[in-house]
Length: 88
Image 1 (cartoon, rainbow, N blue to C red):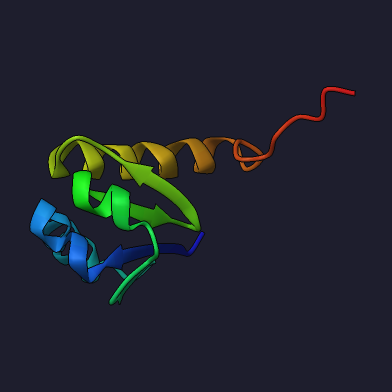
Image 2 (cartoon, rainbow, N blue to C red):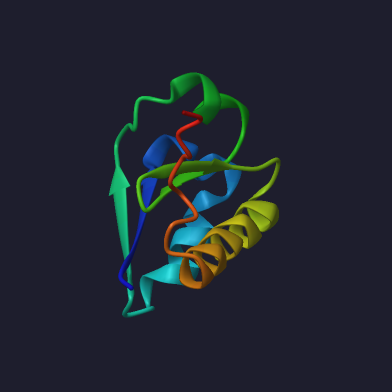
């Protein structure tokens, strides 16, 4: 499974730049840095990243790193984990 992390340059002040560096050398992870991801209010408040297209945020970069790993672990164990169930 190929993984994609999308970072906002403006969010690097929250420590996401260190997270990006940790993943850049992994062959199965594409790290992409954008000037702006359009989440300005959140970007101002906390570290965040898009993980395979899904927004993941945390109160600090260490927790964000762990949340990224947890998301991928869930997806590897359950490929349908991100699908919503239709209540009908």
